[in-house]
Each structure stands twice: as structure tokens, then as C-alpha cells.
Image 1 (tube, helix red, strand yellow):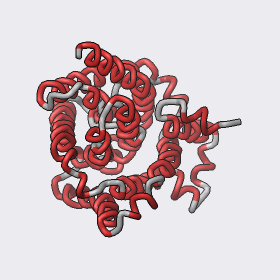
Image 2: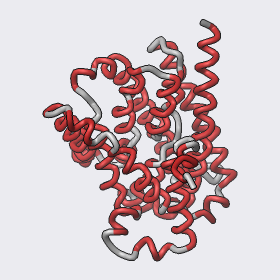
Image 3: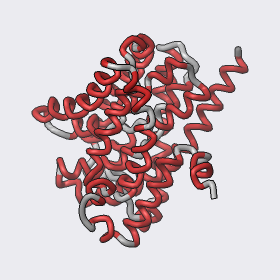
Length: 310
């Protein structure tokens, strides 16, 4: 049937298709997901942080210290800019918007999309429209796109250090393995590819499709507003400050599958958000779906425009 080939043709298909499967099961047969371990621990939303830890570790194994110069020259400034943008915009939303949000969009949904960075989509686009330096930035963008950044913004300063270390240690362990022996890089190179579908399924267990359809309009509105703001800022920084084509900047603006876990994780930190988890997750799922197709189109348009000018 060549199912793998068909899924691979879908942009970020190995993430989106499992998300859809997880959502269907969560909508129709939710009790199956809590049947017990090891299934629940590995495939249900409660196991998300373990899966994220593996993704960080595998990402670290693909980073060679001697090849970090392109990251320092281009990736670090871009990642730093994204983090500053995350913090400023998210803080403004948290400070000035009520918990229930505006126009039916909870504040946690807005914050989730603001701090999201679809590194998998970014990497697939840079394979076509970027260079080796752009591809090397994948590790940094994966880290800043994790929910920990948003949790630091939402949480207290007393928990900041532990959250940062919890995020960095798996990544640093991966880098350490490759530093000890380059053979580990080849050994673990398929790790991320293997974990992504499992992560996608676990993310999907946060989604109730009935809520997704009910949130279609607000999800589209959320996507348009946040995408325009994110793309505008990232494109300006990439072209004006870094003197690049702008493709990499635009490619960082997709809503990631991992961001679907943030409303749930944020509600654990702040229980007042619990009533808004379902609608926020559904709206972010709409944003994920739309940006998965919008961002590649805009990245290609930007690349073609800059190429024609030259």
C-alpha cells in the first residue's frame, strides 16, 4: 500500500497523521488511552515530557562541537531574537489580556502560538531553501520551541533553573556522546525520526475533534493574527539584521506539534487555566494544520523572489 511513502509526501506528515489518529481515538474511545502502562506512559499525553526528553537527546547527538561556528554566527542570534520575541509578546498578553482571552480565544492559546517554533518543518524547508548553516540551527530551534520556554514565562522564577536544566541536560548528554565518539552520531541519527510519530500521537491525545470543529473560526483567526506578527518580525530580523534571504526567518514561524501540549502543561502549573485547555488545544491544532501549509508556501515565495532579484 506504500503508506509510508504517502504520509511522507504530506508536509510534516509523520507528525500530523499520528496527531490525527491520536485525536480520533481520544474523541471516540478515550478510555483506551488510559488502559495502563506501558501504553499510557508512552503514548498518552501524560508521557509527553519523557518523549520530549528523548527528542532533545537525539537532537544533541547530531551536533558536533567542531561544527558549531555556523550556529554561533547565525543560529544563536536568530534563536535569541525568537526568545526575546516570545518573552515580550507573551508577557504583554498575560499582563493585558484576561484568562478567557478575547474573541473566544483563550490567552493560553495566543501564548502557545506566539512561543511555538516548528523545528521539524523548519528543517524540511531548509533542506530545499537553506544552506548547511541553516540546517545546523535545527538543534537550537528545537530547544526554544519546547514547552519549557513558555512554562518559564508562565511559572515562577524559583522554578526557572530546574526547568532550564531539565531541558538542557538531555541535549547536553547527546552532545557529550558524540563528542566522546563520533560513531554515536550515526548510531542515533534516526532517533528523532523514530520518536516524532510517537510524539505526534501523544500530542493528538490532547485533542477532541468535536472541539476542533467548534473552534474552526477562532482557530483560523488565531492563525492569521499570530502568523502575520511572527512572520513580520522574523522576516525583518533575518533580512535586515542577519542580511539573509528571509527564508530561514519565515520557516521558524510554524506552529509545532509539541506546542499542543502546552495548554495542558500550563494548567498543571496554573489550575485556573484548566477550563480553557480543551478549546485552546483545539484552536492551536487548527493553527498547526494551517501553518504547516502556509509557511512552506511563503518560504518558497520568499526564496523565488530573492533568487529572481539576483
